[in-house]
Image 1 (cartoon, helix red, strand yellow):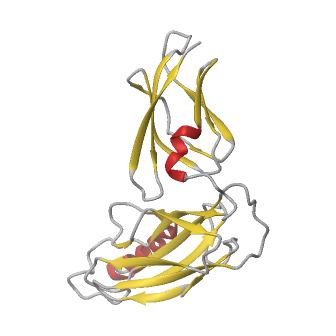
Image 2 (tube, one colour; image 1 turned 60 degrees about the horizontal axis):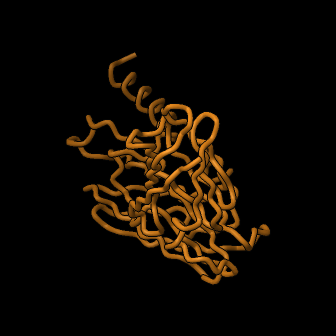
Length: 240
């Protein structure tokens, strides 16, 4: 097999495996914002994508209900995104429309979560200047929070609806709100908790292992994302 033939085979194999590469610093097609809030009374929500590269891409978009391996043909969610497939020009933008189609009954007293995916597919006819670059098909994945109008609580006051208590092997965080709590960091007495900070579903709890003297009393600092993707921090006292 010639060098050129081997190169083509490697590219084909790489492209097949790269379908499962997730968002990274290499992504050049980006979404405005880091999350999507879909209020039940909305007829649709616009999603803004932007191509920061000097050549076009083909984009495939779809939603799923939590399957990280979903594809445009296997993704399941009560939403429709239009257009589902399109070409985005170099250094240009594209607006997508997300619509709830009500194909399944959702809780009305709390949020439900889904995921918006878009696959960035590079062109196959790049010029000589680009042929030696390693081009990835990048799968971007963003959270979509479906928020029923029946919820009267204010998401800006979610910090007031959180309880932190001592547990046997650490601390327990209870989310008493109807909203998802997307934690970024958990600190106990100025020491960062072990492992990745979880996302806590509405009306649910999470046990967080922490280092300490066994009594786990003191101050807990929680950092989480608000509706706008901004970091918010609050402190809680734990007393036995």
